[in-house]
Length: 476
Image (cartoon, rainbow, N blue to C red; front, side):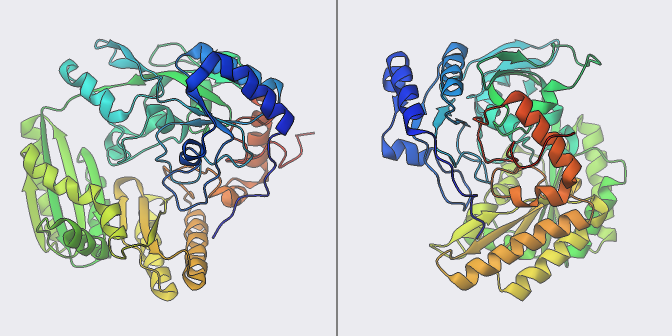
């Protein structure tokens, strides 16, 4: 399996000085207990955990500034931590250092209903935000599945089921306040809906994975809660029919809110796990939202298109309870896949290709799984060409570990060859760093390294993720 680069631990003397400086200010909010450190050195991935040397719990911007100034002075790494639901080893302390658990910075507001915006601190989770917004008539649509923190979602440029209509995190962050490596506080933009003033510093922070600074607040774009929502569950005799139908729906002008794909292996796993009474076969979940008349008209249109692609069954749901049952199937996909082999580990892969090449990418992935003897149900956000294999394997088996490593390499290289990307929403961390040069080329890596050096010259911000500042020489 992929392993981290050789580690360079923080200086023992520097670490000791940092801990002695932080302890009087943070008190019980600074922990060196191994269970706490071990918990903060792993995420939801299969990758090895690397505990930090200590975990700090800042409660305000001043705490973050003090911690970063201290760590910068002594060249001690800093790793921001949200809820630990990332998938590519983002929070592993590869070089030791101080983990910043941002969960106590969880304030919401102010909310501007007129501007449809809300300011949040990084420890707020997406479910907490939407519960808080319920009485305003607005909601935040980015849904990666897990109840992730918004700081983490910004840092990984998260996406999810609603992206086909509402976009991803990059489309919902208006401005960010971040503390840079040396303790400088940066506000990336005004609160205006658009601007042409200089470099887009907001988008520089979105997807930076904590390698350029620590997000301490953000202004997010919100949307009106739709008046009506209807969901269709459509089964097909083959993956090609399901994906071709999805492409046809996307090209028809229908305002789809969500369109998800579950292959026949995934559907059988979900039915075995959740007993929802699902029809067998490769399946699409399609949802429309808006005013009742337009939603009804579009759902009829979707049903007609599905018939043209030999759909074996079409079931629709209007009530929240009925729709909840359908979406439970999608949200149970990961756990259902893991349950196929009790005691096994799982890898949620992530690649994204142009929608026109999606059938080719999924077909290639299925052939790879068959050839390598790997169990891997497939699901994905097919409206934007993003799909996931829920790889189930025994990491203690050398044969299986080798097969899975080969599969992951093929998935990444095929996505690039088809004009796509190695990750549509999970990010790079250290799990996919080996493929960055292949996707971006030397010029792309040089540009990224230059940015990293400029904002983090001592390489203390989540080192070992995305790119190391010393990987490439500077531009001449």
